[in-house]
Amino acid sequence: MFVSDLLDQVASGVAGLLAEDWDGYGEGALSDHLSAMAEQLERMHAAVLGCATAWDGHKGWAFDGAASAPGWLVANCSMPRPDAVRLVRTARHLRGNERTAKALATGDIKVEHAQTIARVAQGREELARRHEDTLVHAASRVNPDDFVKVARRWAELADDQLSKAKGRHNWERRHLHVSPIMGGGRIDGFVDPEATAIIAAALDALMPPDPKDGIEAPRTLSQRRADALVEMCQRSLGGSAPSSRARSNVDIVIDSDTATGKTPTDLLHTRCDIGGVGVGGGAASCRRRRSSASCATPQPVTPSSGVPWPEISRTRRRKCSTSGGARVNRARRSGGRCSYATSTVSTPAAAHP
Image (cartoon, rainbow, N blue to C red; front, top):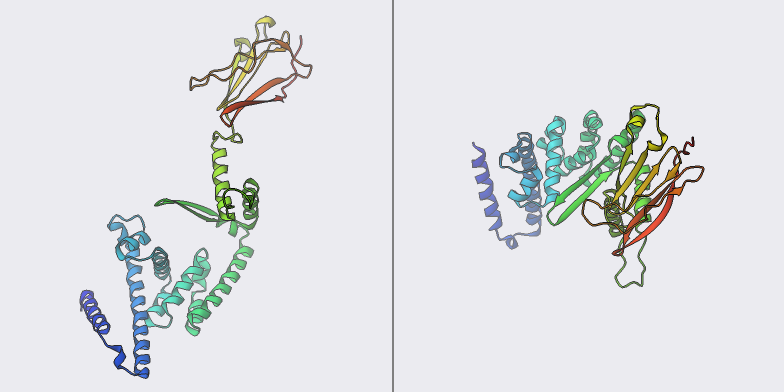
């Protein structure tokens, strides 16, 4: 008999059950019928898992151009995404663990047992295969709700064993997924406890709690941490915020004798000019002549955008201090106008003839 014929019989049987007038039965008969239908529904779920195991193994979802198996189930079976993810995860576990698949097919364990085993085996696949008989035996002896506690305890013992056998277990499990979805994006991952504390402390320091009496309602902790993460990324990319990381380049101009390592014959014509330009605001320069050990700041530089920066300083030769030094002027944009802060960057002492 073909599978299509069997499905036709199932559909016919379900249609008959839906048309049944259950109010005509007594309490005892209704209990018996309900128990029998629940058992058959469980068996049907097991059959669906068996089919899904083979379907995913052959990548049947890719045949229709779907990006993933859960995505295909959501689009073609009107299945909620959490249920689709659970189905695929369990099917993939069954494909690699024949003992579990056989126990499910024969009814020794239920679908909920198999789903729980697949969930705790994630990230612990090797130990789960070694302990497969133990897990299946435990599942066959307790109901699905109690087995959740058993499986959780097994996962704790497995993690402890993995940590002792391999100190880098948690480190190797680290990951971060950033997945674009319709209307936004989803972020999830795993890091070790030390990294978790560092990340939480950094995010909370960047976005402290909002005042309770402000114009807008205070953000939740999750919202503040999401905003802090975006702010960190903007700073890392060198955004326009005052606290963003500066993007800069350095230009060096030296005479040919110095560049080739020759001893200068005329110290008045030796030069070593260093100019730095900060993209988004800021310029730094130091010009040194060996003969006089003097510094000069050139005229303001015009960036590639064609918009000149405000004048930072006039071309004016001034005597360097005995320790040598280059004055750095950084321009930062804040609130639509430029403000300048001056700091000193130490350089090696000038060599006086």
